[in-house]
Image (cartoon, rainbow, N blue to C red; front, side):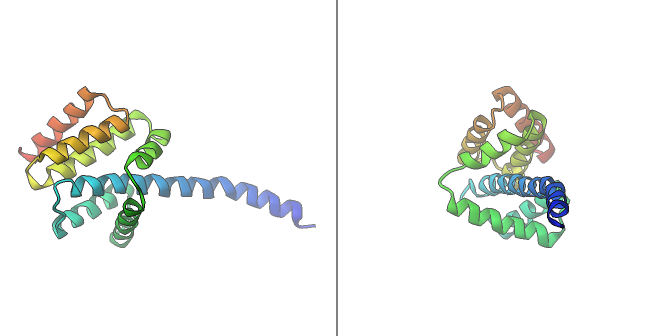
Length: 152
């Protein structure tokens, strides 16, 4: 008797659950890329960790605890992964160009957060830009924009 009703309710809830899973995967992929940018210069201070956590909180409207939890999950996901391709692919599959550009802008903000652009950081940004299908001109425009804001 309740079988058809139960199926109807489950069917109505499934898209919402799938959307939540997709949102969580995209947040994780973005967090992994931000973390990678923060670690590109071989230094990852507590200040950088806090800055990345704040960026995640601001970007995804998360409280401090949720942002810290996302950052921890990103650290584990990156350790479990062989490369950045899978995370970039998730963003490519789900984000239109303007959203990918917004992620790249955040990455540049992380890179310039210490006021110095190291060769490893620049190389990483070009790699990520390529993985996300960002045109070189757009990558460089965002670099100049963020560098200008950072005062560099």
